Image (cartoon, helix red, strand yellow):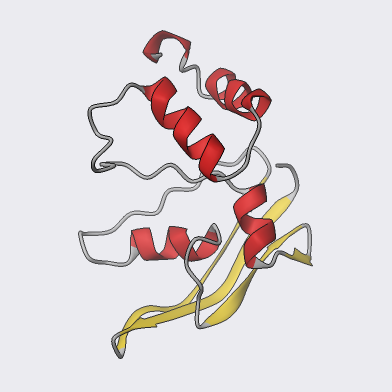
Length: 123
């Protein structure tokens, strides 16, 4: 992914509880962005909304100024959460294959991720 990736005013309620309120940020190509907060702050919900795994109540996600609908997000972004249960005991390669298949991403993308993150020794 290259260019400018933006999240604008993402909002999400679950069971009438506001989980996300007007979350906005942008990241440039090559930039590393951290989402930090305590347990229950909404980090996972935000990532699931941004990546198209969970619908947001409002807001938008764009790449280079072009809005990405949920299907485009799940094909453009690759989200691998931590503390995956029941997969926590599986090796990195298994998890990458699992999520590549879940997102319909080819093995060439998996290899690209392995190289980009220097995971060769973790496989």
